[in-house]
Length: 120
Image 1 (spheres, rainbow, N blue to C red):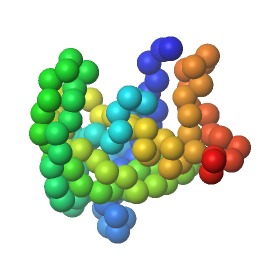
Image 2 (image 1 turned 90 degrees about the horizontal axis):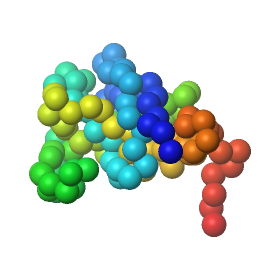
Image 3 (image 1 turned 180 degrees about the vertical axis):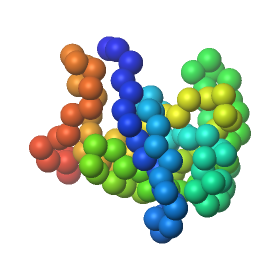
Image 4 (image 1 turned 45 degrees about the vertical axis):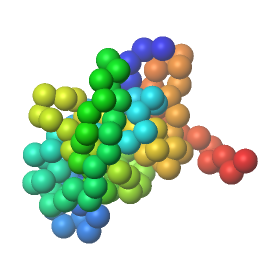
Protein backbone atom coordinates (compact mmCIF):
# COMPACT_ATOMS: atom_id res chain seq x y z
CA UNK A 1 0.00 0.00 0.00
CA UNK A 2 1.27 3.50 -0.80
CA UNK A 3 1.58 6.52 1.43
CA UNK A 4 -1.56 8.64 1.75
CA UNK A 5 -1.77 12.31 2.68
CA UNK A 6 -4.87 14.46 3.08
CA UNK A 7 -5.67 18.02 4.05
CA UNK A 8 -6.76 18.29 7.67
CA UNK A 9 -7.99 21.33 9.60
CA UNK A 10 -7.65 21.42 13.36
CA UNK A 11 -9.30 23.96 15.61
CA UNK A 12 -10.05 24.40 19.29
CA UNK A 13 -13.23 22.81 20.65
CA UNK A 14 -15.08 26.15 20.78
CA UNK A 15 -14.03 27.14 17.24
CA UNK A 16 -12.75 30.47 18.58
CA UNK A 17 -9.65 30.61 16.40
CA UNK A 18 -8.85 30.18 12.73
CA UNK A 19 -7.97 26.55 12.00
CA UNK A 20 -4.51 25.12 11.49
CA UNK A 21 -4.57 23.37 8.09
CA UNK A 22 -1.87 21.13 6.67
CA UNK A 23 -1.24 17.95 4.72
CA UNK A 24 -1.35 15.12 7.28
CA UNK A 25 0.03 11.63 6.81
CA UNK A 26 -2.86 9.16 7.05
CA UNK A 27 -1.53 6.52 9.45
CA UNK A 28 -3.88 3.61 10.18
CA UNK A 29 -1.26 2.27 12.60
CA UNK A 30 -1.44 5.41 14.77
CA UNK A 31 -4.29 5.66 17.26
CA UNK A 32 -4.20 9.43 17.87
CA UNK A 33 -3.68 12.45 15.64
CA UNK A 34 -0.48 14.48 15.94
CA UNK A 35 0.22 18.13 15.12
CA UNK A 36 3.02 20.59 15.84
CA UNK A 37 2.90 21.79 19.45
CA UNK A 38 3.32 25.45 18.43
CA UNK A 39 0.27 25.24 16.14
CA UNK A 40 -1.88 23.66 18.85
CA UNK A 41 -0.79 26.24 21.44
CA UNK A 42 -1.55 29.05 18.93
CA UNK A 43 -5.09 27.64 18.62
CA UNK A 44 -5.51 27.81 22.38
CA UNK A 45 -5.48 24.04 22.80
CA UNK A 46 -3.98 23.11 26.14
CA UNK A 47 -2.34 19.84 27.15
CA UNK A 48 -4.73 17.76 29.22
CA UNK A 49 -2.46 14.81 29.90
CA UNK A 50 0.54 12.88 28.72
CA UNK A 51 1.00 9.40 27.36
CA UNK A 52 3.81 7.16 26.18
CA UNK A 53 3.81 6.57 22.42
CA UNK A 54 5.83 4.07 20.42
CA UNK A 55 7.46 5.60 17.34
CA UNK A 56 7.95 3.76 14.03
CA UNK A 57 11.55 2.96 15.01
CA UNK A 58 10.40 1.28 18.25
CA UNK A 59 11.51 4.14 20.52
CA UNK A 60 9.07 5.04 23.30
CA UNK A 61 8.56 8.73 24.05
CA UNK A 62 6.23 10.71 26.28
CA UNK A 63 4.09 13.41 24.64
CA UNK A 64 1.43 15.78 25.90
CA UNK A 65 -2.01 15.50 24.35
CA UNK A 66 -5.15 17.62 24.22
CA UNK A 67 -8.52 17.58 22.49
CA UNK A 68 -9.45 19.37 19.28
CA UNK A 69 -11.91 19.46 16.42
CA UNK A 70 -10.52 17.60 13.41
CA UNK A 71 -12.02 18.27 9.97
CA UNK A 72 -11.36 16.04 6.95
CA UNK A 73 -13.19 15.84 3.60
CA UNK A 74 -16.16 17.85 4.86
CA UNK A 75 -16.61 15.83 8.06
CA UNK A 76 -15.73 16.86 11.58
CA UNK A 77 -15.01 15.01 14.82
CA UNK A 78 -13.39 15.62 18.18
CA UNK A 79 -10.16 13.72 18.71
CA UNK A 80 -7.17 13.39 20.98
CA UNK A 81 -4.26 15.29 19.41
CA UNK A 82 -0.62 14.81 20.40
CA UNK A 83 1.63 17.87 20.80
CA UNK A 84 4.57 16.86 18.61
CA UNK A 85 7.95 18.49 18.03
CA UNK A 86 8.20 20.89 15.09
CA UNK A 87 10.44 18.49 13.12
CA UNK A 88 7.78 15.74 13.09
CA UNK A 89 5.13 15.68 10.40
CA UNK A 90 1.44 15.82 11.34
CA UNK A 91 -0.45 12.53 11.48
CA UNK A 92 -4.13 11.70 11.06
CA UNK A 93 -4.77 8.70 13.32
CA UNK A 94 -7.23 5.86 12.97
CA UNK A 95 -9.66 6.99 15.72
CA UNK A 96 -10.44 10.21 13.83
CA UNK A 97 -10.70 8.25 10.56
CA UNK A 98 -13.17 5.79 12.04
CA UNK A 99 -15.20 8.54 13.73
CA UNK A 100 -15.58 10.17 10.32
CA UNK A 101 -16.43 6.92 8.53
CA UNK A 102 -13.30 7.08 6.38
CA UNK A 103 -11.10 4.22 5.19
CA UNK A 104 -7.97 4.05 3.07
CA UNK A 105 -8.55 2.44 -0.32
CA UNK A 106 -5.49 0.18 -0.72
CA UNK A 107 -5.71 0.26 -4.53
CA UNK A 108 -5.66 4.00 -5.14
CA UNK A 109 -4.33 4.86 -1.96
CA UNK A 110 -6.92 7.53 -1.20
CA UNK A 111 -9.48 8.12 1.52
CA UNK A 112 -12.98 6.83 0.83
CA UNK A 113 -16.12 7.56 2.84
CA UNK A 114 -18.09 4.50 3.93
CA UNK A 115 -21.72 4.43 2.81
CA UNK A 116 -22.66 3.59 6.41
CA UNK A 117 -20.60 3.33 9.58
CA UNK A 118 -20.45 -0.24 10.89
CA UNK A 119 -22.24 -0.91 14.18
CA UNK A 120 -21.50 -4.64 14.28
